[in-house]
Length: 376
Ligand SMILES: *Cc1c(COP(=O)(O)O)cnc(C)c1O
Image 1 (cartoon, rainbow, N blue to C red):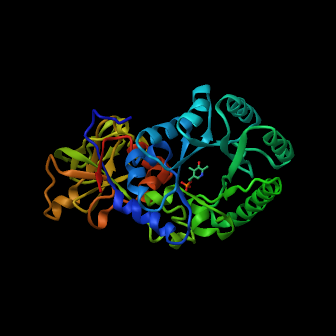
Image 2 (image 1 turned 90 degrees about the horizontal axis):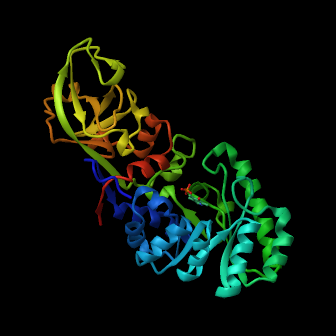
Image 3 (image 1 turned 135 degrees about the vertical axis):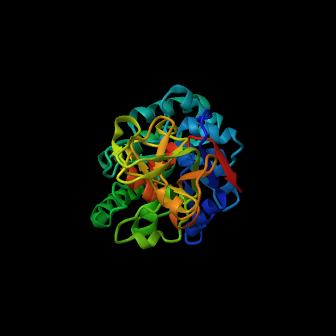
């Protein structure tokens, strides 16, 4: 659902997204784009269509309802629902819309096995818990799981597990332990006659942990140009990635702010010198977090301009004094970039996430809820 009452503009660069995909596709046969949550705010249907001809055979989403949306948008590739069925309509949709679902718990498994009695055989993906402690079967339950499957009309064709800390170079040991545990589970399944496709790696695992590569990769944040190793000693492995989202909002008014005057709710900023401020038509109602108050920057005409005072519901003030003194007039109707934008002031997803005190994933998901346009 799009926020359509505001003035924010999100521009998605699909060629950059395809470039990021090819960074991996060049090296690996089977790369599964993870396009859950509206493709991390980049648009489920648009992203899947852009990647369709790039050598994708499977897309991954979260809930089964997202998989149904994707199927109904015209996607004819294999669709994997990583979170599996939650209610009965999800269960029925697996057959109706040909969805490969992850199954992560005994109760979920029995529900789907029961439906298979009526609907016929079904290929499934088994989700294993190798340490995340959210969803998935544990190693101990493998014998019972296999016994159950043998009596059912369900065939596991894929096995998956999720890494806890692949993006932290110092957690290499954890990654190795998870991979070893997962390999044990895969071996058990194969011994039982199930030739599953194994995947463990997310973006960070794909970029830096060879032992996680296995049969396929699940590529999320890197597809959208986020470098999971930003700010770490492994930052360089993500150097080829290109952000694909630019976000801008209009300048509404420009005026002076005299030394000593406060601005916005609570006067949490007081001008240290005679200044010029621009009021930008965006705020927390657009997903532009209030935590950016007095800490974030925007990009106007290639310059970084600091946020002054509190971010409001639909307005944010920035200091444009320096631009003015450079002879670059700022007037109502000019564009202010919250993300990306021109020149040396371009705001990277990591910059914005840092000021916001969050991760690039959340920046994309929230800002991506606004009206989007596409570069194709
Ligand atoms: C979201 C998700 C991914 C993608 O992770 P990134 O860090 O964005 O690459 C992979 N696997 C599962 C199970 C996920 O939920």
